[in-house]
Amino acid sequence: MLGDDLLERLGARVPGDHARQVAAERLAEEWHRHLSPAGGSPRVVDLGCGPGDSVDFFRGLDPAVRWTGVDLPESPEVATRVRTDAEFLAFDGVSIPLEDGAADLVFCKQVLEHVERPAPLLVEVARVLAPGGHLVGSTSQLEPYHSLSQFNYTPVGLARLFEEAGLETLELRPGIDALTLIVRRGLGSPRLFLRWWARESPLNRAIDLFARARRLETRQANGLKLMFCGQFGFVARRPAR
Image (cartoon, rainbow, N blue to C red; front, side, top):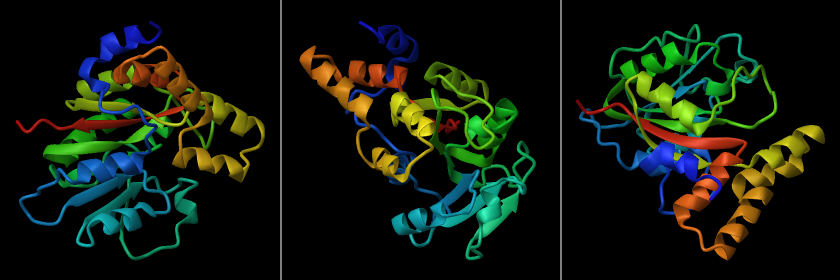
């Protein structure tokens, strides 16, 4: 079956509980429940925070969250930032200006494809995470060039980068499909396409129908969606020991 080779390489990193399209926020909401920091309030670092709007999302999960945004000072998204109600730090794209173990969760939504040196940056993420802390987010696979993007990743390639940095890959889940992103870019990114981040995008819906018709297992449906996704979500963890 198409996609079985991907499943063989990724093993349990592709879950079998459901095959729904995910966004980085939904993964963060799920894994936020696992946070039990010794100091009380969870410490969240948004890596590549841009305007900093994720602080509202995390404060909605826990008003006592200790949120820090980190980004390049010359980022086009940072240039749009107007808020001053949170901590923002500038960095050089590699060295994160935080102490070892400073974060319980690092949130990284659609950022890694823009990073010029992802391998050393992920080593820094592993350093900044507390033992047992999580890296949660999403990145591009088959998405057209956008906003100074540098790389697109396959799920296998990203898992390898995580593990070389000392992180354990826990989950890889499909996001919006590639065909939708290609058509969106070809049409000049009309706003009506924003709906497909909040619901199953067209090709993902077609894969769901195919999976039901062929009576595929949930992991096989996830494997097919991962093969053809424009973006995918990830959860990785710094080992507790």
